[in-house]
Length: 228
Image 1 (spheres, rainbow, N blue to C red):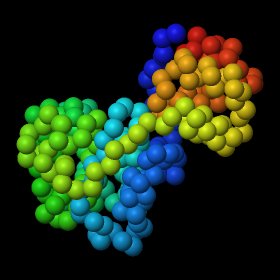
Image 2 (image 1 turned 60 degrees about the vertical axis):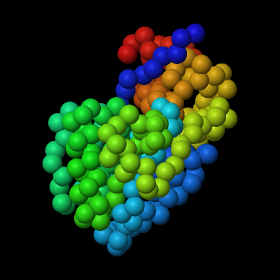
Image 3 (image 1 turned 120 degrees about the vertical axis):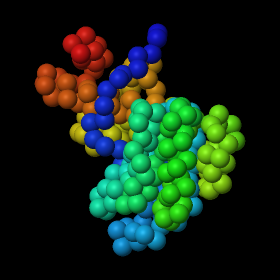
Image 4 (image 1 turned 30 degrees about the vertical axis):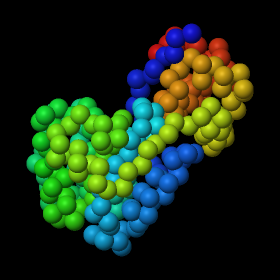
């Protein structure tokens, strides 16, 4: 059957703690080390980090998790993704620059990203960027593509079926929910398989089950979708 991609927002913001690393432990460990704690503010490595991999591998989750962690430390950051059509000027108060979906940048966004990158290096601020392709294959202006490729580069890999099931099981247990194998099979066969969408689906199911005072079953999921 055709998979259904849910267009729904995060119930809670992405964090490093909620990122199931699987084959991407090296990238997660690097970001944790780079973030450190509030006392290291201003001493983080200015060497840029670039994450690449196909959709659903966790790139945006990690960038938003870093943004959230820095905000909790009292720092502000520059954020640019493909939806920001008019990027603001670089702010010297930013602790870091976060560039998501770089493979989709327009000429205006590329100009802003390059300007942010240069300023971040001047002020010894970190740059964390992400895209679907490795730097050498990005169809971007040469000066931006070159800079994205000279720091730490990590390829993110999709979780396999067993790993996705393990994450769902842990998340369900944390909510006090029981997911039968039948329900798990239904979720993985009928909905978008990227982990972010599956976790959002779990949040919706949890809320709907509480509202209707029913256990999570396939009929409940179908009823939820019919009433959405």
